[in-house]
Amino acid sequence: MDESREIDPATYRAELLSAFKITETDVSSNELGRLGPSQTARMFRQVWTTQALAWAIVGGFAILLWFTAERPIQWWRYAMVTTLALALIGYGVVVARRLRESAADGQVVGLEGVVEVHVRGREGYWLTIEGRSFRLPIHFWHVASGRSYHVYVAEKAALIVAIVPMEDG
Image (cartoon, rainbow, N blue to C red; front, side):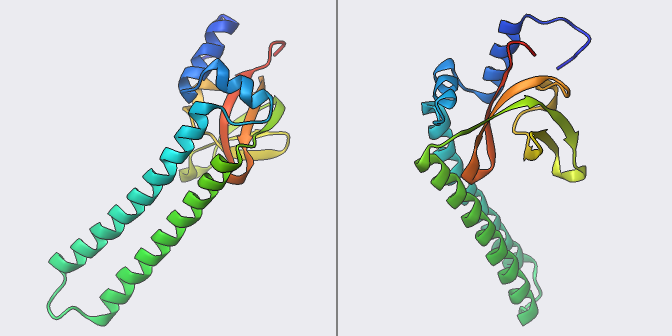
């Protein structure tokens, strides 16, 4: 958010909801400690997207090995690709399991206070609130460091599902 310009609080709230692709119904559910309908649906879609992406990359490794390796293919190339593929699939399974459990559980934790947005090298932008850090799932310019927000987190997935500006902040 560009802090040099004045923005209507209702417009800013709508901008944040749009950035998260959620509705007021989702925020109302978050205030009650639950995921909203569109948030739950998005998390289940992310499960399938994560798994499909992991398998597509593994397939790409296999195709790359098959078409570019010298014949006969050395054992160490098979071992290297297999190790990378298993690591990638394992990571995809862990991420997908956390998303699935979080979506099925439907629990949301509400945090509130002043936030700090910072970059962690190549890891991207992170948001810190109440001494806890989470990857920022929207563009950094939507959130102003030093401003007060309600931040709703799906704990099992360690995923921010909504950020709403505090009325007095």
